[in-house]
Length: 148
Image 1: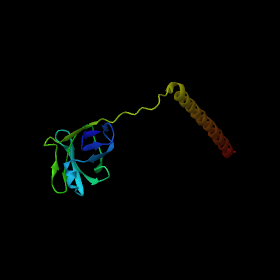
Image 2: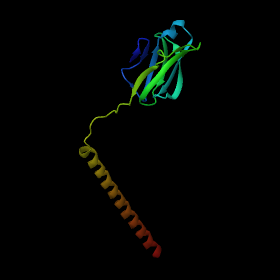
Image 3: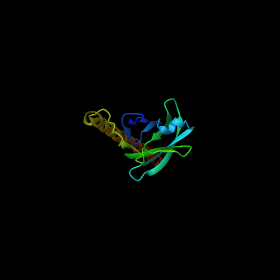
Image 4: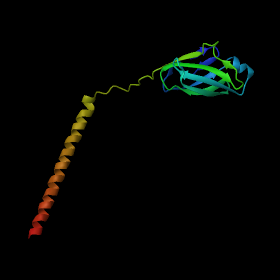
């Protein structure tokens, strides 16, 4: 996802819970500092304010960010020298979507699982009844021998 010509996130969409690589090649990169930091927060009030250290990579200054919630991500960049790139005081904004719901294959439970559960239930009942009869017979046997 391209935010501008100089800022790119991996992936077409950004989702809550996802980790994405950000690549920065803005004007701060022209001085080639050792480090650039992404300063970011969620929503209008920049909640959960954090900084991510970006390291010089083959495509620009890179770092991995995990999106903790679905909201607007407000961000800007600063170099280790104290220079800022804040999109001319408008900051950069990316929309973080809710995580998609993954659905598995449709299973018809009435045809497959419920009969199996009924069979297991009745099998358990038969086993319990068998053990009850067995132990009742054994206890009667021993109680009869003790009296004689």
